[in-house]
Amino acid sequence: MRFSTRYTPLLLALLLCVFPAACKAEPSGASQQIVVNVKNKAEQSQQRLKYHLEQGHDVGHIIHMMQQVKTLGEKGDLTEAEALLDKIHAAFDVLDKTPEVIPESALFTQPVEVAIEGYDGDAMEPFISRDGEYLFFNSMDDDNEKDMYYAKRIGENRFRFQRAFTEINSKEVDGVPAIDRQNNFYFISTAHYSLFNKVSAYQAKFRDGKIEDVRPIKSLSLRKAGWLNMDVEISADGNTLYYSNAYFGDGAPPTKSFLSYAVRDGDSFKPAADTAEIFKNLNRDEIIYAPAISPDELTISYTRLSNRHKLEQALFHTLIATRSDKNAPFGVPQIIPVITGFAEAPSISGDGKKIYFHKKPPGAARFKIYMTQRKD
Image (cartoon, rainbow, N blue to C red; front, side, top):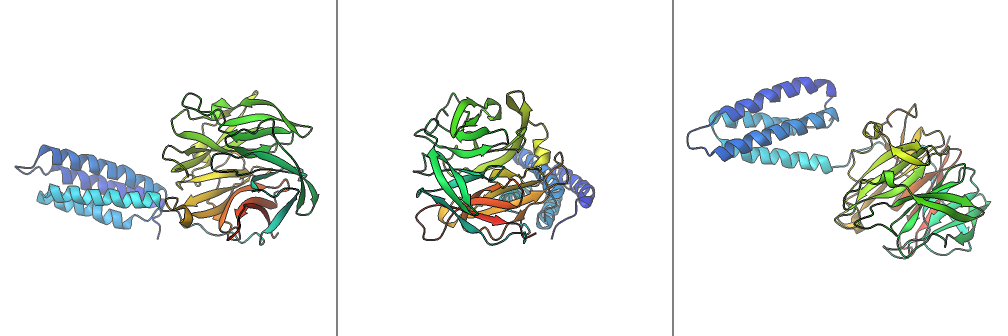
């Protein structure tokens, strides 16, 4: 059950009356601290209720508890009122962390494996060039080192390995390649990430099979300890960057991550002021990353991670969302059910019909790249 947001003003008005009434009762002998606690927790509950009502979440059980606070306050049972408010906040915490039940998309075919002849390592974070001729990807030597490579198409789902980008690969994480139609190349690297340099996104030029003219994209960094740009994606025309901000302050995997975008500003990019609005239907989840944008920028695909605390039980979903205009927010996302298991990092083809991604099949020693395509 979901509460329609049209009921929000009525419910808020009700609870604005509930909590002042609960807080007016100050029986003799009651500690001033309890009164302050009840008032503060009541005000915080109102704010959290307003948010979840606006999101259309089911908060009926929480509203019932909030109404009981009034009764306890009128009786002078402020200790019990405070205990109930603690339960209310715990219920909000559960609601904050519970992934949305998202509808599934039946638009895609069963995935097929993509062969990379001449390469036998892990193949991850694929990016298919807009003309479909090149497949960029990275390896996973261990959790702290990844290197980037590329392959050239030789068949429907077959590519021939070309080379490693030794000119930019380091002993750290170098990966998540992306490229626009003008061969401007973008990637993530932690080679220079430090306490004093929190930049991990870079741009360069793909020319004659090599990466040249590398320079950092400093504007994307939040400049906060523990935060870094985990993924970067470029629009086909090269004018818009889609990227993730992820918090690794508690170690890997990240404890929170959200999507953002930036628009071209001369030779660099400027984070967009309306990012929160554009991704409001996506960033409700706690950990999302690896955005992939269609050529017309009306479709986005990305990865959602749930139950991260036990990686062996973690749930990975590939989702897709659309919009009618490139300046409008993305709509409610849908899960692509044919992409299952330990699968991440989608990449949308130049015709907008195929999605490439990496997956580690059950029992397999390495990650491989797969492709699914729209049925229509």
